[in-house]
Length: 252
Image: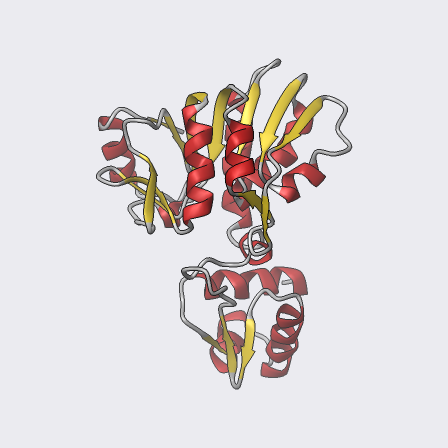
């Protein structure tokens, strides 16, 4: 296993834990404890985790346990690539789409080079830069107040800008999605932006890896009735997918 692959595995193991320990990682990854310590030091310098004595813990911001964007984009990369590859099939030439400031939407933005004559309206700084050199994409920024933790624009200006545009589709991720609670997220400012995008869109498409299915975030931004399509990865529980389909969603 290459060093980068090993570090991605460490992040994956930390994804659903409160902490990881050097001795445990050494056994799981079959390398020396000194190698693990070096890996943790590298990840700590990149601000992808927080180094502690004997191991590491997730690096969490002070905003309702919301992970920093740089951490989120390095988690579940395989799943996000699967979701983005399926989502791009729904985008047609001439479409106007909204992309939220999620890390999964960033992976979708990277797939947009395969499209033609697309307009993207987004509040994500990372997506704006990702698309800046593509001649086939017109990019419109919402502007607004910068949230450093998510590298996104929020607030009154962002929401007023969104009211001026209409989109064929919105692609948005979430903290959790459940039949009884719809799509939920953890930050009220981001939720308000997503809600305005939904109001101005013909179709609502939620991008959610398997770990978010049947989970619930702080506040709902879309009821299950407002969602047209759910795109997830191959590890999702099949019984859960059946429940979403029975609720009227197209599940990909």
